[in-house]
Image 1: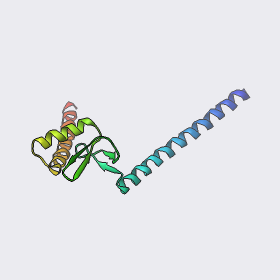
Image 2: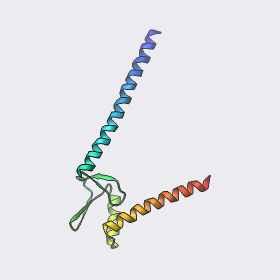
Image 3: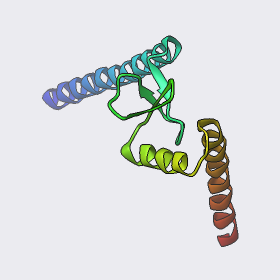
Image 4: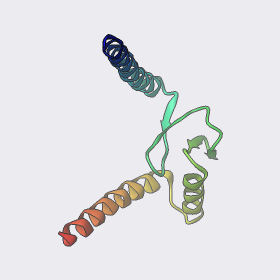
Length: 114
């Protein structure tokens, strides 16, 4: 009986140690991301708004500006819009509006099912 109690306590302690480490790791990652944003090492994807590393490989040069992307899909959307004659600022405002419209549409759809 004492062996079982000892093993249960040991497992509980190990669980608590691992759980605490995970929280600390998440907190360290969040702080590192904030530091990178503040230093300018992370830049915002003009299509989806995700923050990406400035040293990333997916980028497009438009005149003097360099735009960084999280994926080739976002880059391709950006290039298609450039071919259509939109500027980067117009694209960013259009994307933020389409994201808001998509979330409104999904909430309308879920509301109509209830």
